[in-house]
Length: 290
Image (cartoon, rainbow, N blue to C red; front, side, top):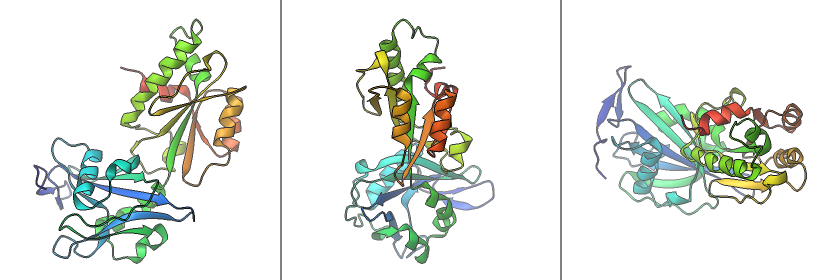
């Protein structure tokens, strides 16, 4: 399908790339009951650039599109995958200077049969990650695969509500329920993605923009606050600290936990369980309007 992004562009290194405004691709993955992770790959049509090689579904971004929108659109045009079923986890951008390629990574709960939907696609296949390098890969995808191989994980942000609310001078001591409700609603701002991950997490995830799952742990007078789309509220029956430690203990293979708290003892307990930790200021800088 044509658009104003179709065409050749040049980067500052003097290379020619497809996509006047850059390009985007989608890399969906699925972890099966057998614990095998498979990624959805496209075999490119013989007549096109890199004909017969395997890589991500994707293509040129149009001038009005963000990287995620472009990746989802291109994938929907090129195969039968229902892109609305993909849970987005992050964007990893390869900047060539004046031109970039954005790899959008997400997961699916079920692994559907996917077929070609355009002349640009010869085949589509769910490929175990261990077998990816055994295929003849599209050269740009082959270069990015070692980085993207590390991205098969979900970032779960666990927020210590009592501690974070205490770091805000918004009258929380007068109305704890109201303060916790405002925090829950402010966390919705993370729907657009998070940049500047703490160093201890950035070293694990190759994303310049992440889309974390958000869990808000409340206790005491704040009990009874309900979850909203994008923010799962967990009510601690007793200690909020104990509830948080229980949450991050024994994580699933595809989960990376980041706990937000300034409580020293809780931080130490979470680190012992393998979770990453950051302070309230990091979070408040991302959810407080400026």
